[in-house]
Image (cartoon, rainbow, N blue to C red; front, side, top):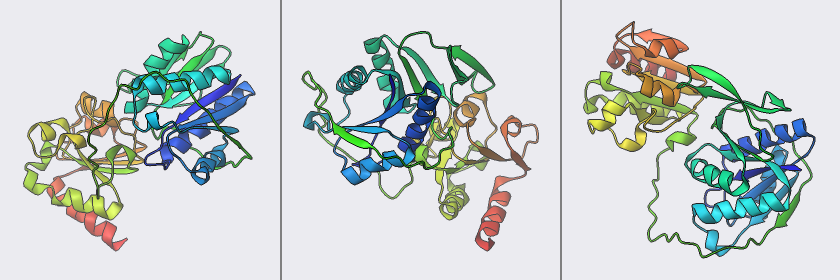
Length: 318
């Protein structure tokens, strides 16, 4: 019996998300009185792999097959399943991101495992195995019992507080049995010089209340001062004021930063569904009855074109 956690890497480097997953998996392992095994697929150096042990990985399994250089859902599912079966994993933990959303259902079928998606806390019980997750766009929560022998959990990003807990660990290599990999990458174009929205701990977002794409200067300046990513509501991206990769909400990016500043966003239910897991929400709107204020920790009733410059000045002085 063990808890297996799949840790993604980006160009051979792990990010905060991977460490969050390992820490979360290690706590479940403690609840089950077993060990946590971290799986890495791709070319990752030993020094980088050892970072997983800093967050309580008892064993690290590295798979470096050249056919797995690029994500192929079918191939990755096969590898994770093979490692899970070999190590007797009865719980598999994956990130609730685009990759995890593609892999988890396939893995569920492959392992005949119950799937608990988008969890935000540790299981409330392991006998029976009961997970906690938000429902109804974050307006309620439910306790869901996973009854299968093997359970798969996808953890929502930035939902679990983690700390370093170094362990002496064993690094093993694994050679999976693979069918022909069907995915071929012909070109890669990477965005540079801009913080990725889903990775950002602070996000400054604007809505239609900004009135024009020409008024986006204060949003970008405040974001730069705070080391934040910029975002927008759906109407803004639909109007072409900002690119669709900045759209947050139920039909856009689902994010959970430590701080979310919403300027000129009314707070439609679809938007709130994408940002409700933020640790702290600051809303700026001229309408004191705007729905965004119901979700906000702090609200400022005022014109964003006047409030944002004042915030910028306050940040500069600080």
